[in-house]
Length: 399
Image 1: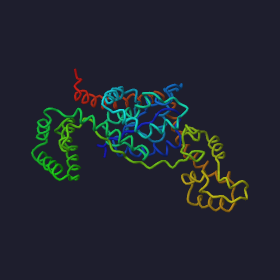
Image 2 (image 1 turned 90 degrees about the vertical axis):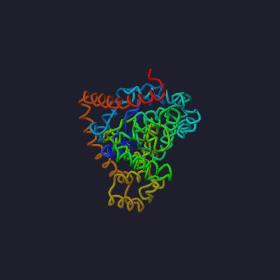
Image 3 (image 1 turned 90 degrees about the horizontal axis):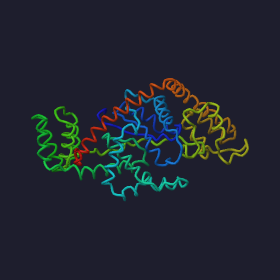
Image 4 (image 1 turned 120 degrees about the horizontal axis):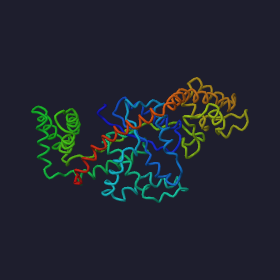
């Protein structure tokens, strides 16, 4: 599956927490062994909601890369880079903005949701309205076929698909497209070109999806054609023009089950998080202050674990025996809330200990972190440059 590229990123607006670890980073670490994985620090995106705040971005970017490495991301397996180190993102964003309807941006679900949640911030800016298009540019410039997202982010991937489809429709119609496509087919060799034409005919005449899948796989195996020819032939199969920008698919990931200290989703914005760098004594203090079942006013009052935010954390950190002990002790008023919370404190600190040890190791070698950022960003930029050459060529701005 390494021929499939995955791309995702994070904004460096603060410390990473357990929600990031369970909801994103563990998944990224798994995907890097299955796909050609690109993960980036979205430092430009930090300005969409924090443009007026003093953020130490340099420190945040470095800390984020350190935390990624400490939680299992491997720079030899994944491409780890910083968005602003690849200025081609901004160029593609600008060029896509010329053909993207304003109404498309205004209907993105998160646009109104974020405005509602962040009422205290002035978000009536071009940058905030246009950030979904910058996200699309981030994806499309690497021709990422898969974008790992939760269900609430699928709309962003669909928006990106629409942007790519519109761009390909407007700029992918070469005057000599069929001649170039046929010439590319002939480069494949007699046997392979015959199979390609059969699959193309089957798909176009009967709509056989299996033929389309086989044809795409066949093109992926070809060594005798250029990347431009491959994209031209992908469009030729579907009766389109040359496919310049690849339409990504959403790679649905399981939503994080990590609750915040108040039972809501763990988030820096809600001030309910435990960071990956939290000291053990502070973890204990924060967990012990968590609200519990309001029915348990006194130790002798029976409780209901399902009405207690602490129970959600038990589901993550406790064994089956401990879960049974909590259920029995809470519903029959045999244990107090502080006693109930102890296994969670121990579980979190045990989870964080090896991560924090790795963080300390990486922090002692800042030159290594800068080297990883530089090499990853250069590798990413090489791919981005190739895409922009095709984009400029399609738009006629190669002079």
